[in-house]
Length: 194
Image 1 (spheres, one colour):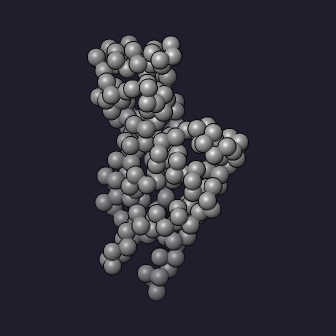
Image 2: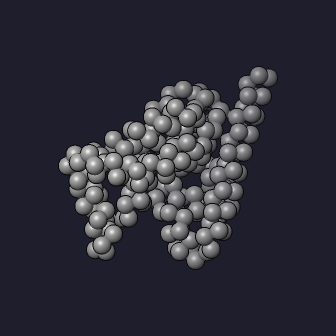
């Protein structure tokens, strides 16, 4: 184990043991990243702030599970963050105008989905179909970053593509997904008013 990894492991052991100074250190290191991620997904600043606090509670509760041999601390923190945000969105999905997500894709931002169709057409099915329609590189980058939890740098190494290309593919893929989902919503609204 590298010295930095060992230090991260020690930090998480202290966090798990209730050490307030260790928790403060963890918070200081990652609050900006967790907030930025939460703000990209949650529809309001207040909800993003709530999500950040709840994420750090989860980090504290699961600190003893951190294994530096399996993932870097930043990767683990982001995995916990993503899982928490998915859970928050699932809880909100009882309202039809909210995007109901499963673990298939998460960071789409606040996207309004068409109301649920009584015939059984669910938000997740629409979302999965739209992701599958993306160009291959965009689809693969979204799946690897948001489903499998890899960083953009790791995806860049896996695919043998420049980091800038991977970032662009992610950005274009998410923008295309948002546009298509918003178009679905607009078309559904016109259909239901006819």
